[in-house]
Length: 322
Image 1 (cartoon, rainbow, N blue to C red):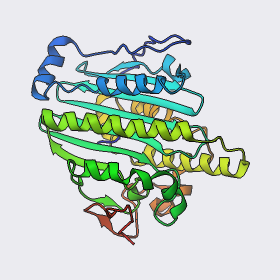
Image 2 (cartoon, helix red, strand yellow):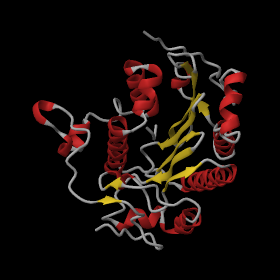
Image 3 (cartoon, helix red, strand yellow):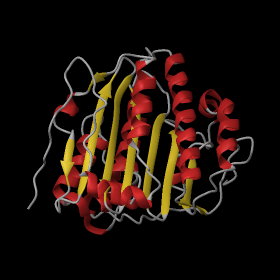
């Protein structure tokens, strides 16, 4: 996720040979109550587009995760979590989580390439309430684009106009730490805005444009055969997963809805699947400055460097934070 006495209530609705666009939804009365205050926002629309568009480029198959992670009710019975997951020839995991309650909706959508491809990770995290929206939409770079130009030139140079187009509609959302900024690209949409149908329509347009661009990148990607490069891609993705698993602010929302144990399982096994399988390094190995006394994890961290209250890239995509 991107924001901030029970048991799993999972049910599978996908076969092994095809995928379904059916969704688990809130009871009509509660759903209408929320939607009337949120301008009929539905993030199922975003996921439907992504799945249909992806299927034009490749053959999606249900992930083995789909059998377990499909739908889940909150412990108070007032919210629903809907999950879908798929894989394809170049895609290790495409997965979505939609949370719907009387007070909020959340979309957490991500696509992870297989290790043979160094394509960025597609990431869309959106939190919506009656009054506010918090959004992160990006092609998260797999490798360093701050200190090394080759990866930035390869994937982001041609996309700068796209980022500038939507930066006009979505101002920078506030302070990000120098550690967090390493996981974002020059075209990232990180923003907060008051709920309105106009903003929602623009956000949907941005999601579609960003996702179409990502599909073009993965289509053009050539399979890596060099074992060293594959291992670099694998470790980079594992590092990303380790960061998100520990630092993702959406943990608080999940814990409140389904409790600590189920939230941890959903984070590690579904949302950031691979953190326990793709590598043996721990969060502390990747980010030792977060190591507290007596082996504890200082989640606030001891990050050396500035925080960024404004967009730290110029109109050419050059990083301004050095």
